[in-house]
Image (cartoon, rainbow, N blue to C red):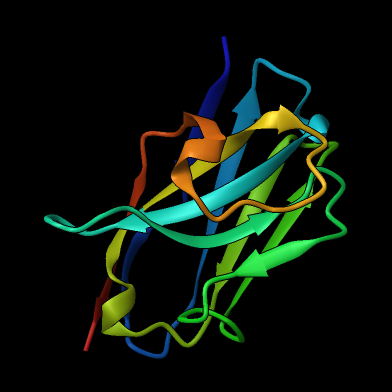
Length: 127
């Protein structure tokens, strides 16, 4: 059974930093790209960042480019999202998800390309 578990969320002041973790189990983690998405109540879940199965490619939403960094440690089956210079508009529940295809060459920014999701971790940025 595939499981993704996010952690690291919390309350932080604007300008602060948080690091989210996504721990995976149940499939060969290193074969799959991982994406981070976020959602606020009443809005669609939106793409934040993604990293390829090897870690050699990354993709970011324009709204977080230059502030967030995605990375992975395949030996630890974990993906990280380092979030710096946080803004109140970054407040959301953050979810990690595993690509449904193995070793995909192009990173996907759409939810339908991801088949397993974590339960989410809340990030709240106060102004």
